[in-house]
Length: 430
Length: 104
Image (tube, rainbow over all chains, first blue to last red; front, side):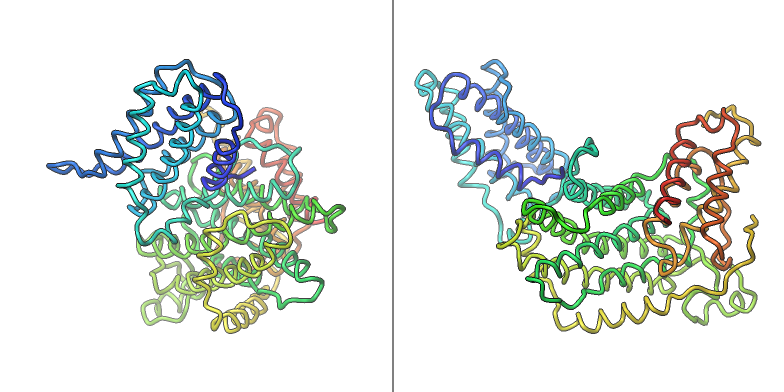
């Protein structure tokens, strides 16, 4: 099941705030957790360190709390339990994201981890033999100081989206419900597209697969939105049509990746998993729990589609700027640049202007998917839950309602126009 | 696929890979995403195994998806046991079978 930093922090806070009696085991687990949280804070401090002649107060405070927590935990034997397990995962997840965080996101995560560290220290010190131990008192002071110095900055509302970034579980079997697998697969797909786009390994065919999976997922989310509207029909979002237009526009291009001997694309793998999980969903829910789970999963899916569309639009523009795409001149928008090639129907290297239809289709798919996510969020208080509160709030803020009707008409018109050309001869030749 | 495998052995993957790619790149309004995705997955596996799937950007869409898909699957299923036992080829075969199932 996909999780997120917000889910992990919620679970951690749930555990630390509902401890009634503290014995040696509970206190030991809290101290082990403190070590993991210190490690997470240290990774954030490492990413924060821009070489300066004199370190900032913020940097010193952050390093102090991280090292004190780690030192304190080193004084006790490691204890197993749910709390240390979750703290370790939270530290790993935060640590992996640390190098690419902006200052606002970093401050937010420091604040969150530091708060859990303070809660853990509170638990440990409630165990009478540990109440006066110096290293714990020092860690407590360092954490208090950190809370005073490192404050989330003004852009914290947007920074909150980092808390909702989904973290896919790599091992999730078919025994999990299709809705859970769907949430996990969209997380995996979003993560894989982002990673490949960052590394420059994203291919046209991987994007094609991602867009096809997005089409399937948005069709399902659209149907759920209609069901959740109390049986009253809602206007279909046209997001699936827009995703089809993205694919139809992209089909004109190739990037030569089919000559590569690189391992199979992880993006394609997650896209297929998303498709499989949607295929496995029952057409009619058999229990109320299934309705709630399906609604939550539909929100998890819809919330990720706008970012996926952004990634695709950005990747296509980068490919064209880098001269990585080629296409038949006749399949490109009319342009004076390609007149001779068009006359002879030659293959040309695509320019950023040539890929504008793909980028535009991706942006429209993003806006229509945003509308779908906002529509699903509207019913979050009644059926299921909103798994990504910060992200949903940011999507609602960014929704441009005035453009939606125009975007939907555009997508429906274009999707209808993507009709097949006359069929080919029965056999395919190389 | 192992590097010492003859070019000929790898070459037999090119044709089914090209057919599957043609279906994977078929019109989204005609071929369901469930089918196209599985075909793209099969192509990924075959490409990684050494196949070079041909694609003509000017090629009109294949007329009979069902026949082409069955032919691609059949082509993979009748490869020599040595080639077919490669994990990547096996995965491609499974993906092609899933595409047939999705086509109904």
